Image (cartoon, rainbow, N blue to C red; front, side):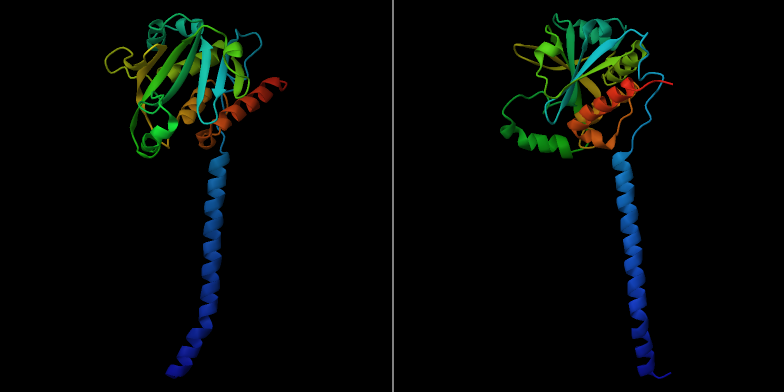
Length: 250
């Protein structure tokens, strides 16, 4: 075969190779998109021994609060105080109040209450820089959450003693106990809130809503870990859990 014939034969094979490349790229793209979709919808199994609670168990009310981008929770002070340990010790240092507002976040951005427009650079730092120090917030409340907080974004969850203990242990595990006891990292003038140093770090890979999702998972609830980047997913988690509670148990 002469050079001209060889070049013609080579040109004849190119479309086949191009088509194969397109097919392979399409398969790879489909695989990536499928994997991302599976990861996005991945749901932990929960713990049926903890949730739904047996009606004969003592019931502990927990309220979840969503302000549109951040989630806090409100729990009975007596339930926290009845569990000896570092978390109860931290609660004991607070001013009076039958309810405790609990949250977690970046050690600087979460504490600062200056106008949000002035804090955008710091928010970007907290979001994108890995390994930011964090704090566990504890704030006493004298009014029940149903009266203290607006209904929008509020969810109520009722846990068994065992489920609440799992939740409390996960919260307690956040505390930095390197000095032997919970350490106050920040306060606010005229505000009974206390921010305790946390051993965890804050970033886009582990935000406040991720943390709350982990706390709910410790209470036995199924969660969608990746979607808990959104505060709205915490509300949906509670809604699904309430459906589980309402469903007849085998």
